[in-house]
Amino acid sequence: MADLVEAGKIRAVGVSNFSAEAMGRAHAVLAQRGLPLAANQVRVSLLDRSIERNGVLDVARGLGVTLIAYSPLAQGLLTGRFHDDPSTIGAVSFGRRMASSIRPRTLERTRPLIDELKRIGAKQSATASQVALAWVVQFWGDTVVAIPGATKAQASDRGRRALKVELSRKELDKLDELSRRV
Ligand SMILES: NC(=O)c1ccc[n+]([C@@H]2O[C@H](COP(=O)([O-])OP(=O)(O)OC[C@H]3O[C@@H](n4cnc5c(N)ncnc54)[C@H](OP(=O)(O)O)[C@@H]3O)[C@@H](O)[C@H]2O)c1
Image 1 (cartoon, rainbow, N blue to C red):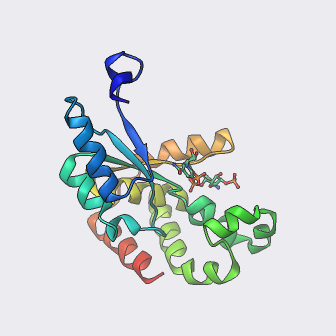
Image 2 (image 1 turned 135 degrees about the horizontal axis):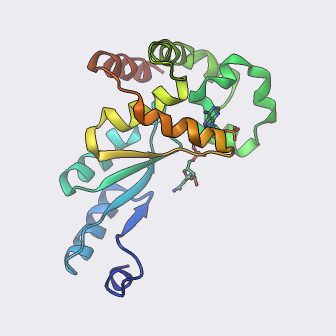
């Protein structure tokens, strides 16, 4: 990857699903070539906060690596659409249902969190998804950015509008608390 930067074919180096330890190693190898490790794409959302436990967040902060949160909407679970109509779970692929635990019991457990996302959103004419995305990119300061998925152009437009949602400290903390309870 350092060769590619030097050849002018890429501007920066990013990795994906690297552990804290692997990030450290990649950073050290690149540093020998005078290059930073720009990013690590990892799974992060209000329903997956493993970066706080596995050292990835601390190492990213220490080394100045940006974490790109993939599946920031827990593959649609945090949009609230399955909570609004649980019968739509049946149309979701088996793999996606397993990966994000999209099942009736999860809907029950996460309902207070979704209700709060909707409640906060209503104050700013925003949807639950936009608030969930805003939380991911605001809660950990500059370290985390997000790459929400969109199968429809409309979802991508709505995702962009999440950048306009501003959450207060109290709202960030309330969502933090509810997500820890899930
Ligand atoms: N590096 C890796 O290992 C890795 C792994 C997984 C994903 N990724 C990447 O991460 C990105 C996002 O992943 P993801 O698709 O899992 O992300 P996600 O943002 O958690 O979920 C996206 C899904 O949520 C639903 N959605 C999005 N906006 C919505 C809205 N406004 N209203 C209702 N539903 C909405 C859509 O589902 P419907 O299509 O059902 O409408 C969409 O496909 C993708 O670019 C993917 O390639 C990377």
